[in-house]
Image 1 (cartoon, protein in one colour):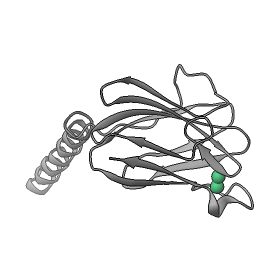
Image 2 (spheres, rainbow, N blue to C red):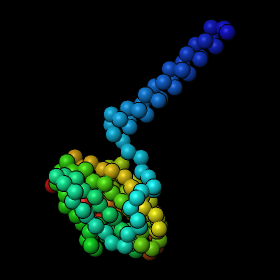
Image 3 (cartoon, rainbow, N blue to C red):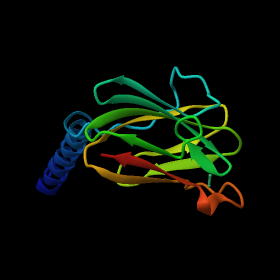
Image 4 (cartoon, protein in one colour):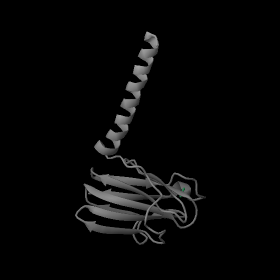
Length: 149
Ligand code: CUA
C-alpha cells in the first residue's frame, strides 16, 4: 500500500467515526427523536390533551378539513413552559401534514395510521402549527396554535 492510499483510508476512517459519533451524540446528547408511525395508539376521531403529571402531557392531534383539533375541537391549547409532550397525529379525511414552528416536529397525518414524536417545549411563546401537505381548497388556512406560558 502506498502512502497516498494509506492517507486516504485513514481519512475515510476518521470521517466514518466522526459521522457515527455525531449520530450517537444527536440521539443521546441532544435527545433528537425521529418520528415514527409505529405506535400503540389506535387511530382516533377526536383531538385530546391528556395530562399525565407535572409538565408531562400526551396530545392527540386530529387533522381534518381544514383545521387541527387539539382538544375536543379546540384549535389552540395552553401548556406550561418546560413541558414534555408526546404528540400523536392522525387524519379524519385526507392526507395532511403537521409542522410545529420552532420545533423539529414534522409529521404526516395519514388516515388510518398514527404518527408520533416527543417534543419538549422549553421556551414560552406561541408555536404556530401549519399544514404542509396540499389537502384541498382550505389548505392555506389550516393552522393551529400551541401557547407555552
Ligand atoms: Cu391540511 Cu393542507
